[in-house]
Length: 367
Image 1 (cartoon, helix red, strand yellow):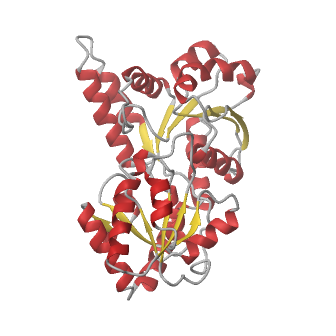
Image 2 (tube, rainbow, N blue to C red):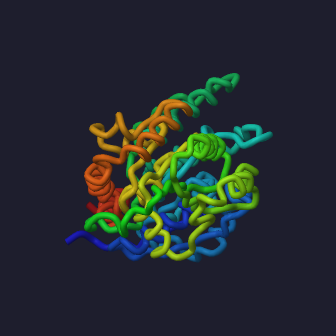
């Protein structure tokens, strides 16, 4: 029988996918997990100040067998200030500040990226949420280090890459289900279920939708996903332009209602320029949507190779053509969708929770 650990989970930015991950891990783990979190705002200040804020609340870190933290924590500061009583600390990267796409008028803050490098080096265990993400991180880290005038820590980067491990995040759906949550809608429903931010490239999505409307191809829209302080202007424009096609608009609080929309969808689309895993896409696939995705980022890791020709597009024009084809000629989509749904089941927390439990036992040296 495997040992049960007492784990302290630290999340300096408890919102969005970070929140989902923390709650999913706690609920699925066989270990005793305490969550210690900070609100999801002022992310740059979180990276600088979270170590102090969290240490003030922990009490005795020696009461735990292991600390599990995410990338918004300056782990070098945390370990230096935490003292000799700290147990092993495992760091999980949802994203990083070296390769994250810049928004309009933003400039790269390399100080924060270097914080990610030092944190990765300081970690006793290091996890990334996809092979793409690890490769992207290492490429950007080496580019940054090349800019240093001297004393470049190349060996540090080699050590980071050697100790890093890929562990996909769990998703909040069952490992085994009997197909879509409900019957697909007519006219065919196109699902967008991503954050309403620039890095998801909504402009390309709505441009293709506009071409569908001009071509008088029947469709309906469910534009879901979370919104934050700044929402790209294209969303308000789209709300007016496609008011006759929109069936759902905005974040859905009810998990049951959200899954119902996914079950009604024919296709889920992504035009993202940043995606280190793709939980929202895999949720939609699990509940019956056929995915149409860019052939880049983490997506090729998640989709079985036999479907790559139909699932992936390479340009904006290719995106429109393939979306049009899926709407006009859905033959075979139900069968293929079931295969893809079954494949997505491997990312369920029911399965991934066991993987995390085993990995963390190894890091705690309790083999």
